[in-house]
Image (cartoon, rainbow over all chains, first blue to last red; front, side, top):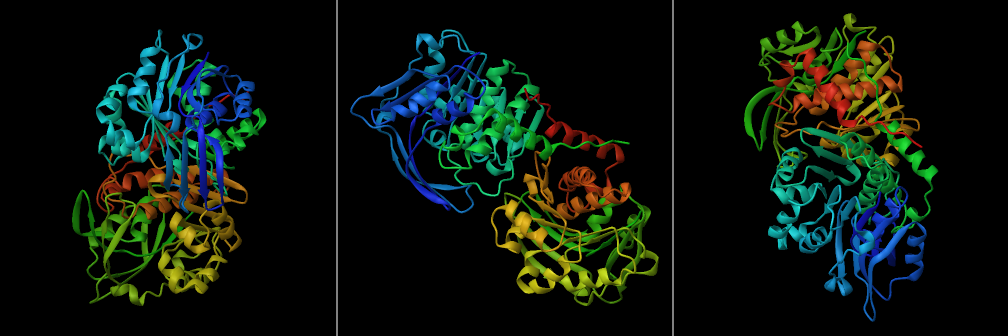
Length: 307
Length: 307
């Protein structure tokens, strides 16, 4: 099975209560690729970069089975840049700088070599761009998942609602689910979102875990309680990468297998936050991942006799 | 096995986004008793009430196996009264009125008929009062759990730290755990609290579930995702009552059985919030409880092969 991931490959400057990093590789597609490549090959990247994006980073991703046919390099231009400062609770942050650079001209094409992919992860981009990618696919993937954010709800809600009709799964955080529906109750918001198109919905709650909804079923996975969350940047994309990587590896899109995917995604996200940017994701081994999944089992596993 | 519960029996006036209730029976010991009496008899109540506390309520509790030998009625005085208004998120509230009334003179005594109880739940009261009750026990209970709140951390921290040395378990919410330790990370706060005395710690996170800590072990139980949280008043005490009731019923204070207790407590709390005050707790049957525990199993249960 193969997984196409569409999104940014970029630079971030991050300040957290633990320190700051002036310029580190980031971007949604970068995190998805680092996470997913532990489970599935190839990961087929669609993105746009400037000629400042480090060749070593591209090579490191290639070495992990990430294809770059869909990554366009624009000579003489800079990669997308984001700078932000996290508050003490690590759940909220201020954006300090957003430089679109090459992203302003992002018009993603699906290379012929990517056609036939079974899984498609649409990172947080303009809904119009997300829809274009779906329409570029000659054969509909078995599962199309997408991310989005408040910015598109405020500036492109009609287009966003159209894309939602074409995807199988939406992956958003709790604030986004509430904003999209105007409903405070996440259970009610989930029903409203599933009525907009997606049959599956993941609501991420940061340190409070994630919920998976489908029909009348709901599954909850906690975040691993960590001594410190060093840098949450990319944790949501890493979660999505682990989740989609697991689905693509197994080729199984049943609700039960999605539960496993959520745990895998949560495990990957728990690594991501341990160091700046994707640093920690580059270090983890299959053994590390298995150990962490076992920790998740112990964290929530209970056995109760109903007499 | 028997369970002593020490706390308030009171009146509450509650405003939530769903409505208001001018005067409904409440109080920590009331909620603990309604929850715990589903699992263990007797529940042995220690509290103080005015002569305005309804006899029907006392009788309803007696019918559920709650003993009242330790409940003092002060003639001509009023019961403790609290009034509060919940914000839209239901996680925060403003206290509008606090009338101590009989609670100002609360000097709890443990009746002879309660001596020998294996389980003791100390509701949120002045640390000095909590310590007095412990010292009144001729034989130390197998498990002493206590609740507390920010008010005592601000006004009676030295006394609070003394009581903590005498209890086995502290049950607090996330904000209280942080305030008690000055540590933002709940994992670090948990270690610091266990170093103060309690071998076991439960950190309640409201709609985000609850964490159980012991040595290096940690267990997490989610809250049930509900369409609406109608009134969260008493949910924390109901959780504690279900938890302690399960422990007292089984007589098993292993970590594994505490996990089950947390699920039982979470199930009881999920009923509590469905109606004003303890209304819903009076309706639920053993079947309702079993059905809800099964929902919790489905909510978190996953099976993953590590290959």
